[in-house]
Image (cartoon, rainbow, N blue to C red; front, side, top):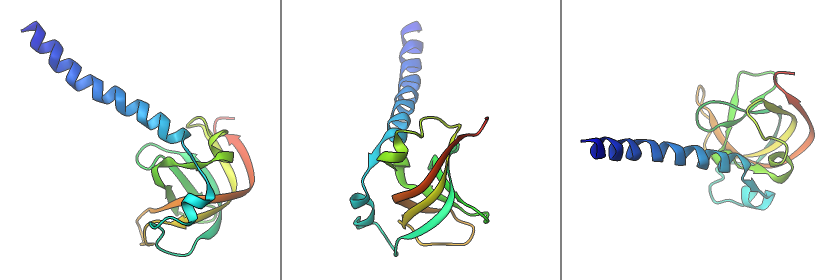
Length: 130
């Protein structure tokens, strides 16, 4: 009976621990402009937005709020360019600036559009609690 309980506990806990490790790896993964802009998944022309990049609960975790709107863009698989990936190390960190993004899903009212980040400019970093 004890063995059955321990086996069940291991089967339930180990996948949860593995998911947490994968999430950390996704946040720190990096990409180059080429993989984003030339991806077959891009559904429309790339565009530039002025916004704030931050991490949120849910999927995708990395999201860009377009300043002056109520719109959020979800960053595909939380993949960030090199210059952002090295600085965006926690959920409290935010990056304000100009983001060149390429849409991976069509724009629909009331639905978060998924994008990849091709490049950035004029980035300023701020910790949300400071």
